[in-house]
Image 1: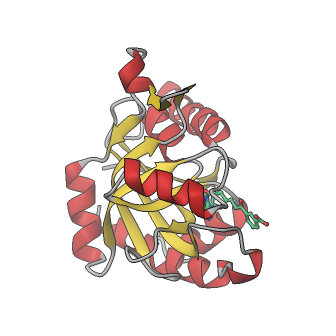
Image 2: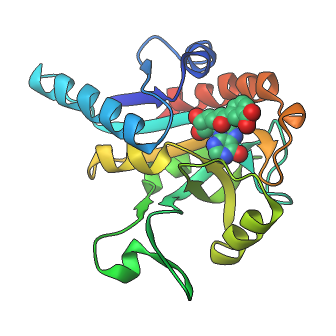
Length: 208
Ligand SMILES: O=C(O)c1cccc(C(=O)CC[C@H]2O[C@@H](n3cnc4c(=O)[nH]cnc43)[C@H](O)[C@@H]2O)c1
C-alpha cells in the first residue's frame, strides 16, 4: 500500500517523521476539517496526476481523550471518524446530517489498516474518534457528546475532513492523547507527551 500520511501541524509531522521509515512521506495539511480536507485532497490529486497515486490515507495527530477510555500519552485508533457538529440545531436537540438526508457525518476506517495498527499498537484504545470545529471545553458539552457517542474514545479537528478527501481510499485516523476532553484547562495539556507517542504510533505504519 502506498500510504499518504498527514498531520494537522508541522510539530506533529516532525514527530511522525521521526518514527517513519523512508518509504513514507508525511505532510502537515492544517488545523480543522476544511483545511485538512483541502490539503489532503490536493496531495492525492497531485500524486494521481503525476502517475504515482496513493492507495491509502492515514491521519496521525494529537487529540483529546474521553475520560475512562484513553489516558494522556495514550493512543486511540479510530474505527470511524464522525463530524460531531455536522447537522442542524433544533429545539429538540442536535439533528445530525445523517438524519437530515443530506449525506453522512461518518467515515469508516479501513478494516485492514485498523487491524495492522492494532497489531502494532496493542494497548491503543479502539472506537469512534469525533471531529469537531470547536475544541470541547465544558462539562455540559462533554456530557452531550458522550451521550450521543458512547463508544467515542477521542476528539480531534481533522479526521472526518481527511476521510472525506480519501474519497473511498483506505483511511485510518490515529490520535495520541494530549488532554482530557472536558472543561478547558490549558495547563493540563501534555503536548510533548502526545508528540512522543506520535513517534511511537508512526512506527506502526511501516507495517502497513
Ligand atoms: O485551548 C487552548 O488554549 C489550546 C491550547 C493548545 C492547543 C489547542 C488546540 O485547540 C489544539 C487543536 C489541535 O490539536 C488537536 N486537538 C488536541 N486536543 C484536542 C481536543 O481535545 N479536541 C479537539 N482537537 C484537539 C486538534 O486536532 C487540532 O489539530 C488549544
